[in-house]
Length: 137
Ligand SMILES: [Cu+2]
Image (tube, rainbow, N blue to C red; front, side, top):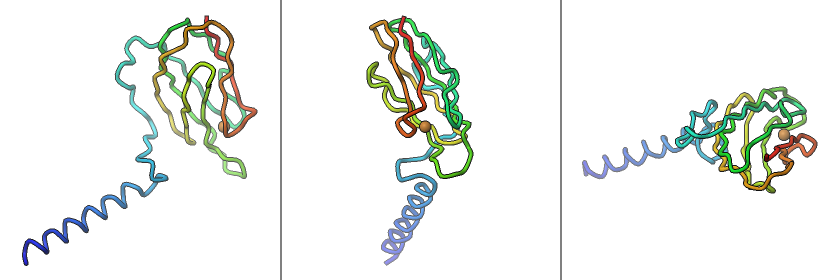
C-alpha cells in the first residue's frame, strides 16, 4: 500500500514538472532568451545582426569562402500589432538553416560556411520583404 501511494505521488510530481516545463513555449522545449556561445565557436568569425521591425542591420556582410561563422542575432522588434514580431534568417542557397529569433531574444548559432564565392540572399520567411546579402569572397 505504501509503495503504491509513493508511485502515485511521484507520477503526480512528474506530471506537474512536465506541465510547468511546457508553460511558456509551444511545446518545442524551453526558449533561451540569451543563448550562450555554443561549443566549437573558437575558430568562427562572429557576425552580429539585428532584426528591427522592417530590416536586418547590417543588411550586407562579407565572409571568406569556407569560413565558419558564429551568428549572434538580436531581435529588437518588440512592437505589438497585427504583424508577427518573430523573425527568422534563412538562406537555402548557401545551406544556412532557419534561425528563429523571438522578440527580445539573442541567439548564437554556428554555421559551417559556404565554399562558392558569390552574392547570396538571406531573408526572413515570415516577412518576405526583410532580407540581406551574404557575400562569399
Ligand atoms: Cu521577419
